[in-house]
Length: 140
Length: 324
Image 1: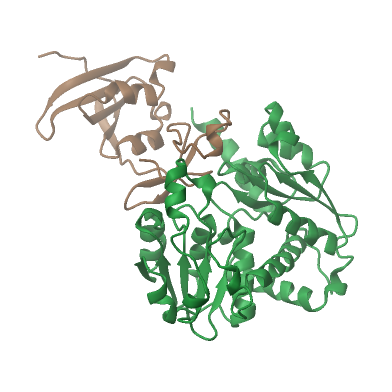
Image 2: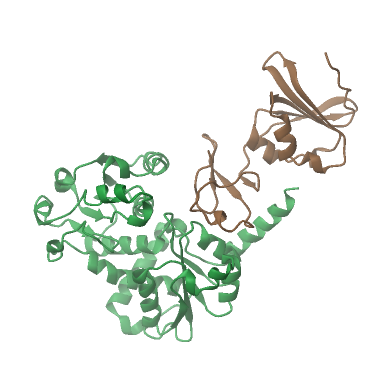
């Protein structure tokens, strides 16, 4: 079994669905930060069978919890200080997401004006429905 | 990372908050709609009182796709108020043909006019304009999305000729899938108590699922979907006919097969109540036979006149002009 060193200060994203860590790494723009990041794929999990984990040696400010909440609000966010978990953050569905997903409606203004921000608004919290701010098309 | 877009977003919200626009029929509360219709009614009775209300003001009609009726209605409304008009009637004759963005166009037009009405084939274009405009923006139709001034016209027609907007059974007939006027009208009428919706269309052109789920069911509204027009006629207080629009189809054969499905003629009108009203957003193709035009229950040409009055009232409201 592969061992990755213990994190002393930073954030651990746990219970990521197996195979999803790389796309989350990209969506959170972790490639753009200077800090040390470890991606663990297919770790054994009693609850999930297999899971991914991302360890980030940086403060929680570097992690966009809105994007993470949109991707999968079941991911566990642990804040580590002095080698111990000092806080667990609960993820919720963000009210709006900007420039994470794109509207696929060919009749939407964003289809011809590429520089517009892609803004989606949460219109139904129970069913986790997001709609494009411009054309109101549902994101599937 | 996401802080910059967030700041921009908040700036946008501030702009929208302080500048009044009409982008969706739901932008106005029921009370605001009532006030607007009261003004429109007063205009219809005392047009001379309003003849100079917008003297020195200009409306820009920015029509990126042709629409004679809506554009002329806005222009007539402003001229009736003593104002002037400028604009373009197709994207070919605007800077859009050179690739100018909606945001840039509205920034320029804001320097020329006091208010603008925008029609655009792309959905959400008027919202983009509103986010960058320093003058009020009226959505005059954006693709298959919204057409709020048509909805105001429909509400005004119903309220004036029926006397109320609640306790009615309305039949919506024809292209309920792509017909934005139908979607907007359902969204607007759902706010009034005891409105029953009868949705009459071929299976291929039924209302989109989100209207069924998120509007009708979510508001516990009574609705029924049927495929035959005749059998439902005796139940209706209002019949809202729509055109099967050729431009919404990708396939011409499909259009030809569907377009004659629901034609209203004299014979079908015999099944209707004596005081049922027939509305249509126009233009019609052949879905209402011309023999119906003489029937006093056919009010679609009166609807056009109400459209001018309500647009006059809307211009006054958005320009914050009060006429005593």
